[in-house]
Image 1 (cartoon, rainbow, N blue to C red):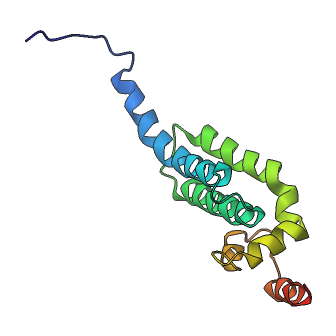
Image 2 (image 1 turned 30 degrees about the vertical axis):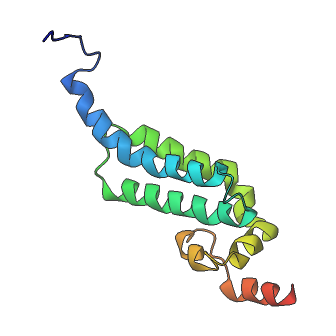
Length: 128
């Protein structure tokens, strides 16, 4: 049997990067699969999905176990916040998420910074 030898383009110094890269970008890639999918393409899944990404990334930042990929982690977090800040405050998006039977108002606790008033959201749901 012939053994094919090849030279790896990775070194042992790359291992710490890959160990941190995976937990940083896995939730982002999973969320992209959900949001861009055809089966669950509803306005009501956008905010809860993004809220879960932000919660996960915040936990990684607070945990302190990420050092090599810290700039990537912070860039992902700040980029998502900046890009979707209007949707987090848009009443139509909030109501669509709160009407979705899978999420309802469970996702609200993930976004502590915005301090959603669940009573106000519930009152607006009843009006509609």
